[in-house]
Length: 205
Image (cartoon, rainbow, N blue to C red; front, side, top):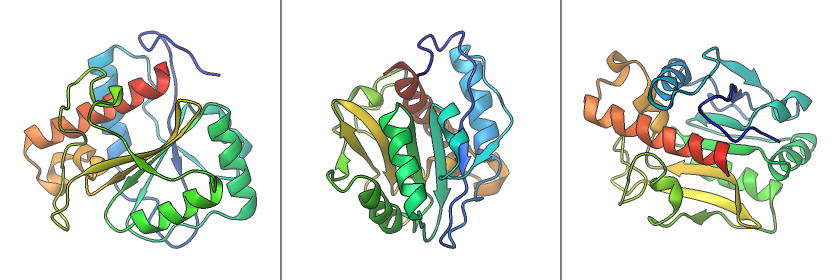
């Protein structure tokens, strides 16, 4: 479905516009900044413009990965549930980056898409943490919220990751323009590096 050589493959990542009242439009500078970092550090040919896609749209199948974020409620309607399931089973990956407050809602909605599976935390030994940059302790902690450890959950089908959900991490906040959250550069680099690992894993597996 998708190319295998990330050094020559041009692609786009969709940003998911979902219903339910959550702020799907959060972190407007995140993806453009991440695209730029990814291109500079992997020599990948990558489209920098942001593309918005809705979960029920047939155009979702053109994206190797669809990214979503927000702080609140998420709602997938029945036809969207069906389309997202087909998309992920066909090779696409959904990355849900909890921007603090989204996790219980996306967990509920993913259960609608894959009732036969449970979100499972990825072990620190999973190759996604060691693709280009090494994260021996798993997902980096970008922002403090409830004092809990950062976790990366996934749905795995026949050995392939279908979706990923971050919790207590906020990768997207780390990707934003530096003046937005005033994070130390070391923290921002960890967010960019982990994002690079995730995207490389998606493209090459």
